Length: 329
Image 1 (cartoon, rainbow, N blue to C red):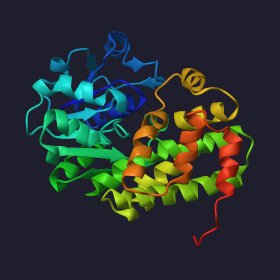
Image 2 (image 1 turned 120 degrees about the vertical axis):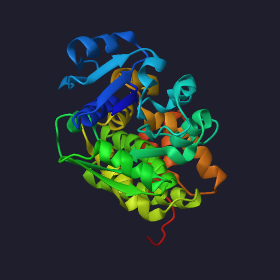
Image 3 (image 1 turned 45 degrees about the vertical axis):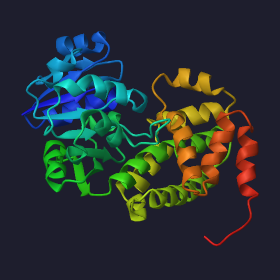
């Protein structure tokens, strides 16, 4: 089959290799012509995955039409803040029955929409759109490290289709019908990783990180339930699994950014030093708006907001959490 892979970041590149390893042709779309040229000439994308060589069946283009013409499926792997614009540009070349898999994790600022809804708003037919989420750092998956993720979709047929495209001996896939839960978990774990990084950068220990992750998962569960998702989804790969890896891994951009902020860097300085999109910073305003809209108590998320807005110093915000009134767990 011929698969269009929209995006040439680290996760998109790793996914292109994963799909191509099944014998499929993968055509990647790149906003920047330089990565496209490198992929075509050397089968590498050194800006994102320095030590990874893509299969020969992967090529790249800067043309939306060239990427999507004749495609049997499309996989979107662009940052959340660019997803709507890219989906809009792709829409003239996407048939109404083309299966679509979304890898982006986030909440759209202004609308509060999840990423699959953003794509659906531009290309229509939401029933054929699936979302993949879980503990899936590209730096490990591209080299065949053991990993697992969840694919959520309204249609079992579409879910099974993308499962067949991505399943491998080292990449396990579970199916879910809980689009809201899977996608909200994928967005919110990035916010929690920022506060974990801030705590680590401020000199707090492992106990503090475990506390933040555990209580953070409770906050995510409350929001998922309020938005119509299944709270138990938060105990699976898209929830707990992704939360653990994003809050602890050296590959986590959100954790890295939080650590820099905890050490005294400004938000802009942290983003510049990380050098790639920090999705938790992008998702935070929309997450806070959702919490207020649904009247969900999320003190940790509010603490991140206060720190990033410059209203509280990192250590003061964290200590304020410790001073909250005691309740039953």
